[in-house]
Structure formats: structure tokens, C-alpha cells
Image (cartoon, rainbow, N blue to C red; front, side, top):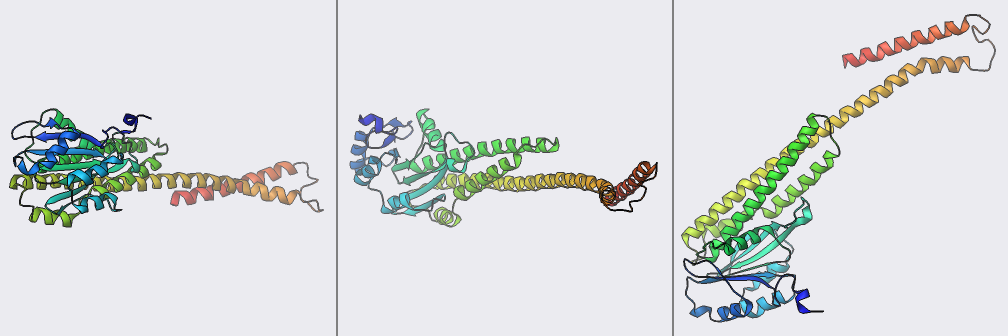
Length: 339
């Protein structure tokens, strides 16, 4: 089998794409060999020049390449294999380590359509790695390919967080549309398995909110005491991007409450329909009770059955049954009107 068939959308080292950024210039494509040369001579590179390397961890060669050439802190590799993947940004060994959760390209409102992006942001290098194709980082790639200027790796990180917020806003809008449709069906009394759909949407929102909400303690420490190589403007941009996140997460919490109220309304509607069906069944049972009792008594094979020899006995029994049936029905409906 040829090597290119096992590349998982990356080269043999696991590199999906690489860019080098110079002052006031758009990013230029950087290949694996050039990236190695740049990393080996980073001490002699201008402070205003930096690179971004994006890797696919599904390619087993990616992590090995990072160990050999990127000189990343051990905390970054530990983060790749830890169980907790909540979104956070931490300061470790003269760099920022970020864990960012994002949605897949073919996001279908399933909880399993959420994956993780790991980043190591230094003064002149940003390394990003993921196992599945994600929306936000590809939007950042498109921005670089379209010639947008970036002055620092921190600005790349801020742009990524804003792209993620935009993706989440789109998800929230789609969920709002779905909820509006369900409300319209509820008002028109044309519900069809919508209660299960609401449960799925609520689970997705809960998972998104749990994974995407940045850990406040780590983020607060970072914003209060950022690394010395992070410019004040980048700190302000990072603070604004986290505020945008907070707004989106607040909208998600409101949607969860709205879904909860809809579920309660649908449950009440279902209970009301069940009560109506039970009432109809009760009325039928009550109306059939007199004729069943009288038929049971008259059908006993014993002597002394009244009206057995009377020529109008049948009509007399019918009249008695009808009278008791009318009385029973009147009592049942009268009680229902009082309720």
C-alpha cells in the first residue's frame, strides 16, 4: 500500500498545513523541511516573524515529529492524552497551552460530533493539532489563505476563538429555528415525536456548554498575569473573545431553559390527551354498566325471573335499562362539568 493512502490528509510527518508570517505581510505556505529549518534557526529569526504549524494526530507520525523538532513543553504532550478536555488556556514553560473543543464539519446536532483541538502558543511559534476535521480551525486557515494579516501567534489564537464563537452562534441559530418549528407544531396540535427531538437538542447544548465553557480560574490567572511576550493589545483582544464566548454560553443556557419549558408543555399536553381518553373509556364503562348488570341478572338460569311470562316484559326491561343508563350518564357528565 502506498504511503499517500495513509496520510490522513497530511504529509508523512502529519503536517496538514504550515505558514510563516512576516511583519505586514500575509502568511506564506511552509512545508515540513522548511519548518524544520526554521525551528532549528529560530534564535536567529527576527522577533516579528513567526510560524503556525497545524498537525493531524490521526497520523501516528505527527506526535513523534513534534517530540523531535518542535521542542514543546511536556505539559502539552500530557494534555494530548489526559481525560479532561474542557476548554481552557494555561501558561506553562514560556508558552500558552490551549485546549479548544469544536464541532466537526458534518455537525448533525449529535453529542459525538464534538472534538478537541490542542494548541501550544509561544512568542514566535503556534502549534495546533487535532484528530478530526474541525470547523473553527479551518475557518482560520481560510482567513490566512485569503491574505489576512496577523502580527503574532496570540492574534492567531484570538482569531480562532472568535471563529469558534461564530460557529457556536450559527449552531444556536439553527437550534432556535428547530425549536420554533416544534413550538409551531405544538400550537397547531400536530406534534410528531418532537419530544424526543427536544431531548437530543438539549443533550447537545449541555455537552457544548460543558466542553466549551472556558475554565474561569485558569483564564482569570492568564488575563491578570499574561506572559511578558504577549502584547497588551493581544491581551485585550483575548479578553474580548472570552466575553463573546460568555454571551454565546448565556444564550445556550437560555435555550436549555426554553427546551425544558417546551418539554414540560408537551408532557402536560400528552397527559391531557391521556386524561381525555381515560374519561371517554370511563363514560363508556359507566353507560354499559346498567345493561351488563341487568343482563347478568336476567340471564341467570333460575326460577322466579320477573316479567318472564309478561307479553311486554322485553320493553319494560329495555325501559328500565335505558332509564338507568341515562341517569348514570347524567351523573358522570355532571361530575365532569364540576371538575
